[in-house]
Amino acid sequence: MTDVFEFLKIRHTLTPGRDSVTGYFIRESNPYVIDLPGGRIHYKGQHFLLRPYDLIRAETGVFLKLEYFGAVFGLPPPSTSATFPFP
Image 1 (cartoon, rainbow, N blue to C red):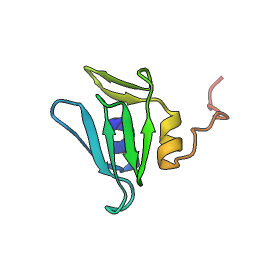
Image 2: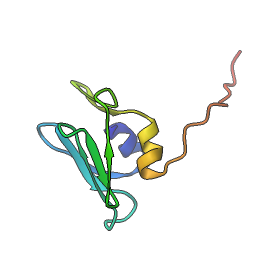
Image 3: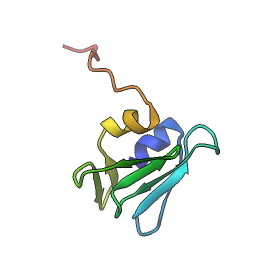
């Protein structure tokens, strides 16, 4: 998840214990909190509850199910019609 935020230039901070991610989306007036132990995302006055397998904390990082990037932040889904220039 933090790699995606880095790529999209979404401001974020992962706590040292890797139990939450905080930051803002586009403007400082749009803060968010992703609470791993609580299994929820708080953004724009709404709480989005996560199922246990929607958010995974691993040695290599924190991973959020793709659908939440759209449901929470309004990001478009990735293209499923990608083409590659090799046979």
